[in-house]
Amino acid sequence: EIVLTQSPGTLSLSPGERAALSCRASQAVSSSYLAWYQQKPGQAPRLLIYGASSRAAGVPDRFSGGGSGTDFTLTISRLEPEDFALYYCQQYGGSPPITFGPGTKLEIK
Amino acid sequence: EVQLVESGGGLVKPGGSLRLSCAASEFTFSGYSMSWVRQAPGKGLEWVSSISSSSSYIYYTDSVKGRFTISRDNAKNSLFLQMDSLRAEDTAVYFCARVQGYTLTSPMDYWGQGTLVTVSS
Image (tube, rainbow over all chains, first blue to last red; front, top):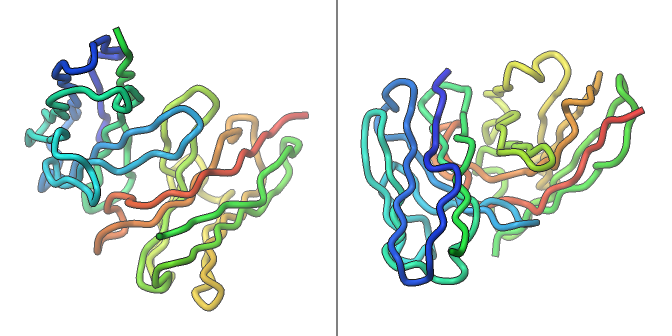
């Protein structure tokens, strides 16, 4: 089973700043099968990025994903007030189990 | 707009059973794999189970194997999760989600709002 670690646990930034969230895997994620989700309190998760760098439908272009192998990053170029939320990475290699990281909380400084 | 609406959650005693349902609309349900993902109170996301479009392939996380059964009824655009021998650690919000891609483990692009299952005596 691939274990995902996310850092930092909490990131405190101000609107307009750039955010970089990290996701590290315990072993290489095949074919960059890495996704990112955003979750706000009381809401379901929302798919942001899949295939490590492809934006899901309707996701603003200030969100970008990168990385390969074991190290992946979600970058938000200029934070908007609505971006402050929890972010989870997920690996989805060809075989189960599907695993999620523990999450990074992005909070307003 | 794709809609997924879960139902069937509630309070159940340890060892009891519940059957969750997920009603899908505004997309061709029979063409997509589906998944259940849960989230314990204040905790992160945990994948539970996935089922292919024709029910030919089914996966479970180890902690629910032998206790939970995923199924679907394509004629009724519905997904189900039969949960037996429930434990306190199964307490969570259960989300149903549509699988985006061609493989059963692809990302989930649409999610329901979830239904809360509480296992407590």
